[in-house]
Length: 313
Ligand SMILES: Nc1nc2c(ncn2[C@@H]2O[C@H](COP(=O)(O)OP(=O)(O)OP(=O)(O)O)[C@@H](O)[C@H]2O)c(=O)[nH]1
Image (cartoon, rainbow, N blue to C red; front, top):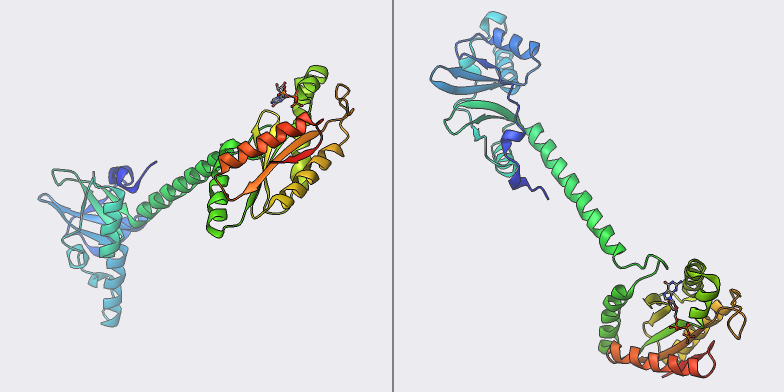
């Protein structure tokens, strides 16, 4: 990521500098500024950089003349009388941050840039600096947004478009911590598609994927607000139910099981004739791996007892 300290001013400055002699007349300087569409002139002598003449210097000068009632082209004087001197310069390898600080602190809009030998190599304006600054900010914002999007994507299961196991683990840490703090139980429900190997074998893997998507959607749609569904692995899903006791978890599990059953997705190799899920649940305020183990044992019992049913640990 580009930072303000990484950008040397040499990359931002204009190398097109126009110089005048200090003894040059202000009228000539004005004409030079106008014809070259410049906002400043560097004042140089054979001995080196002596000053800078900006639009602002001219405005102040003309204003002085007007108030003294001696505004006439012949009275505009010479550049030396108007220029800011000595000029505040920056080094060509100074970074954007440093140069912006100088410009802001001193209220200077034009900064001559010199090399290590003190020779004039360019001029940088506050506009150049602000443009570079906003460009960096924009890039940093885009990168931050991209990172956030990638982070969110890394937590989503691409097939079912629900949270994956990693997301579940992150979420469960918070749910468990809250349950232990408030001493109120939370519920976990493991749901497993019945006879799914047979489904894949009969209808093919692609239709198997479509069925899994439909199952995930039906269960998601059956959820109460605040409850969350994750893909636990393979054709197994898990419901995380904050602030839920065993009776509440049983209701949620049954709603989910019913929702899948009501899809009436044909499954000719299932004794039930359509796609179903079995559910095992556990609730409490203990550590989540223990609750998952309890729900898993209950799921096993539901399978043993004939599938398409809910059992509690
Ligand atoms: N199409 C598809 N199949 C999957 C996916 N993940 C897991 N499976 C399949 O799901 C099947 C699960 O089979 P088993 O664990 O034997 O369970 P089952 O056939 O559903 O039987 P019971 O759970 O005992 O009712 C396996 O054939 C896996 O290949 C997936 O993302 N897409």
